Length: 490
Image (tube, rainbow, N blue to C red; front, side, top):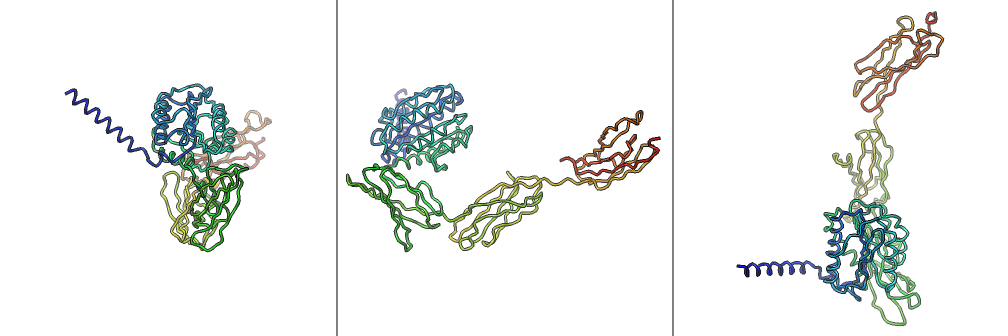
């Protein structure tokens, strides 16, 4: 019986190992050559469980890569009060060694001195082959990372690609400035319990940076493209020639010459929604290099601006641009109270670039999305948030002062009853025991059911004011001056 159980356990272990190996993306094993330095937040702001999850995430992320010189070199630098280099880039040449090292890392605790750790990272990444692609992967909770802008800028200027993964505690603006564009694939903000969902996307982003011998598009718009490549020349050893032209359209080929220390180029004045082919030719009298090429399609010329104006309590005017009647079939405007109001839709012709949204609720934030449906079937959209103004509260509609007796008046008024809470009265009152003294200001609050009241001991020519009070504020009131009677002074 014991032998049977042992065989079952061994079979289960073999199946699990087979399952793990089959899950490793084969395309990553020998695809790449470069340095990846993990900058791991190990300070006291990171909970123990969160730290363990970050380490586990790193082990899964890096598992598919072949390690060592000529492949991918991995180092781990911990951030604490003082930085700690857990292991350098040349320490681990196989996955078994790396995985074991990652599983045995202990948390430092202490302060989050990221700036000091970045100085160490800069030394590690710049002392290696300058032509080798380098990645700094920052794993952090993002809590008070300190002044990292300058150090990150220096790393990026030296050709290091900075990527970041932050839990939901992170300062997104600091992280946004730190990473290398494009943000959508180089910056991830995720709940620690859901961190596994970004593994494949982040791994693919790293592969794009360190994939050997590849001309790649790192930024693309309707009129431009930024191409990047792994440098193979030096400033005094040759030059690059980049050539490009549109596919399927008659037109001359454009050529440019770039210095030997270049590793990127921006192609401008391109046509929207057009497929181009580009080729990079490294030219050197020392050796022959392969020509690198890439095809890309520029973006459809979409909306670049959506704005709001003429905001009132019940309406908002929405405008957009640029107007593209030749390339757009129609515009669609969707709007609804944010975050969960009913969504309404307005469809407009391609010649129109604004519309007035009416029937809105006062003092409410709306999410407005303008979509352009292009004639090739593609759609581009932009969204803005806009707020309607607070509704003006109804004013007092009538106020009358009727003299009654010596220094007394009957005050009567009328007001809109919707949402009415009461009335606020103020007047100048004369001290009945000392007519030579200076009058004082008196005030009185009356319920909404009141329509009149009698005021005594008014000062001569007193101003009597009545304001309606609503559940959302005080409306505009009215004031009258009590007539001066000579017998008031007798």
